[in-house]
Image 1: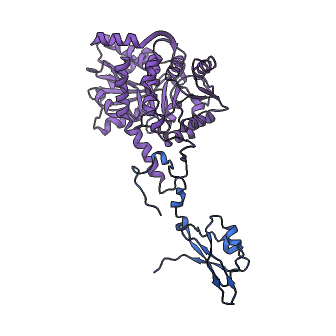
Image 2: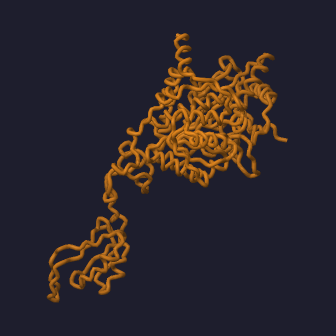
Image 3: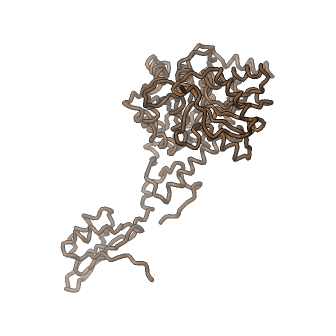
Length: 406
Length: 107
């Protein structure tokens, strides 16, 4: 069986390249053969669309590249193209994602399968171009499916999966693929590239299965809905996001059959017997936490890491399963929700998920890595010892821990 | 009003798949006052028809003999399915033949 898979993989994998995550994203967008790219440059996203512009200019990718004057227009053009039936990609970060905000709700409300890459970046003021996930957390309630990748390979694979999920007639929603700004977007990693023919087989166009703007068969999208109708139409999109999880799992298992790679919505490392677990998302936090967990285990502490890959729809049951045996849990947020009962945005989601399932563990909210403040392995290592102490007390601290703050 | 359907019965995203379906929206239900035309005072000048923004003034091939003996071969009536009761017709009528009457719930 393994041999069969290995042979199949040899056929599918056409090369291994050193790519930044941004270039891996551009490669994936080329391999799925998009029709329209509408984007505006912003750090740290710019190198994706630079590369895509190059592909279009030199004829490697037959797509319409729409240069626009702002991110608001970028997503608006994407909405129009997608409504007309095109396969559309865009990308942005930080202020650009904020400027897109109202159109984010329109894309999901109109059920348009746009795929967007978001290398996470800190928000101004003070001005920062560096990475964190504040931009992403601010758009979590816009009705998009949201993945957070942790390697360049995962980002490449996730873009391919994202088009399949977005365009599935049972889903029909836009998808964000996010990852660490700079720490991933500009870091070169080895990435296995697949045969574009196989990628295109995996992502067949579904133009005929969704209603589109077509003069031969005219329809209206985006008409006014009076209070008698708004609630029902909004609920359709809410329900589509909630029930997209089945399709997300199905697409990943088909992806695994084709490309021999699979990504679970929640990924656990050394958690079977772990007493103390750090919950992370993105690349830097996860892999540094894992190094720290290994060191902690060398010193006899049963440490584990749980990475959240699928952020929306939130994989609540998977987290309950992964965290039920832990004695104490910390959620490391690279974003902040000022004025909340506790400041970690993903901490709140994890806390609610566990308590909805009647799982009550001492939990610590950790804020770290804002605007790319260095998250040292020793910081995560220290967290495991804090969790040991918290487990002894048996109570969740009432305040978020702002790590790395002077 | 058209039937209020469940979220499972509405086209995805609220797309409008049949043209002209705004006709199903009977905006007459918004009205608090209804225009009533005095057919004897009306001179058939057509100004109400011209000004009605809806438009909800019907120009009908209906002969009418006024009390003063004057014969008309047409009649203006209000389409109460869509008239929102804005009162522009009553305001513009040069002979004050249109009155706005409060819509009251019958006790």
